Length: 512
Image 1 (cartoon, rainbow, N blue to C red):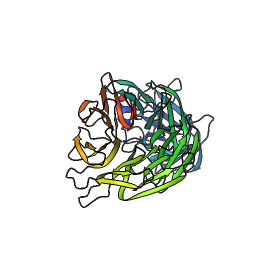
Image 2: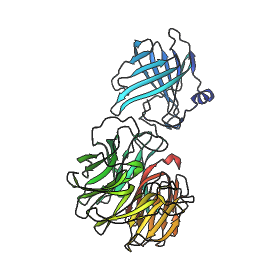
Image 3: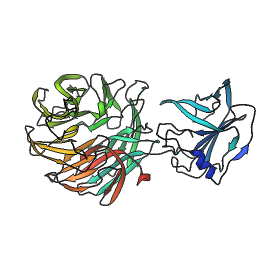
């Protein structure tokens, strides 16, 4: 029972053990300075994973308490013992066993106090540490009388649908590892949904990241949010990264029924993946000149059936051949950076992003309109604005042929909508009690002429004038309360559905 991911705090497991009615039995051992009992230094389950290891002449034994807040299964210890083969005085090879969770395992002990376990899986090399707290060898009871499946869990993929009137239609927490993230979702022509994300990702100041950017997970849901199938997809062969990567975004279903999404690649640039409805790879292409800083990239299908991508550290529109991903045309827009969203405007395109910082030390939001070939038509930049509109989040082309921009502005809380006419001239602006959360937000127009707005924290329904009709959570916090139920988590994507919206992110039923 060995952890596989990365998290935040060290749990003081000794305090738990010393208060437990099931006290360990002291079994003295000598013969080696390394013999003794070690406490797991939990960096994977917010400090709540209680694990011990004992080292004696019989080998190494791991005790994993399944009743802690990481496993939350049953009040007993899962016990696994392995024989050791000495490599040097301070390093040992774990003798492999058939069906063992540890393959190519080694143990290194530093200064008679810190034991490091290393082993290899298909996701790379794993290292976990135990700190010695006693030279005596203990046994921990009660031992489990049966084997349990891998139960470690903090956050799951969260996918849920909400109607325009604020009713929770369905919700699904999908478990796969300690930290799981649904980074993108799209409704499908068959009435179901496809979810893209990662199972067993890396938590670091929020969920989730990975070290192997070219592997992800997809989950097919039916119209009621029930799982039909799930699979891991491997869409490139780039090896392991030395830094954390975003999982990806902008999952869409094309008019041909295929699926397309964007993932950041090691060392900068983006990868665009096309797969069929069954999750089988059609093509995957790297674009090293297109950036993915802080989620600033988006892809869409054009009216002529090809693909348009806005991405880059400078604002760049790239038109791609649908069937191969080959670049058809590129256009770069001097003086603009970090494009966030692109929408179709009667065959042309409109883009929202952030302009470079000016003398007042902020990057103002911009609205750019270009032709179907990428030729600039006009641009608007909110650079001379005392409220500092910035951090572009989303853009829609409204029914009146104008635009609605979702961004930050001062003062706190930051969520701001700016309505413009067809030429980008501002008509009205409204702020909302929402700190956004995760620097992500989405908006779409509803059948009644109003708007559906979501951020990492909040889900809000607005009327045609931008006034709040109902709000499920704000200004901060994971809990979102609807007319008939709640979810607890952080949104990473929203897409319109008939008379409502579907959201995806991470969360847990344990948080409710």
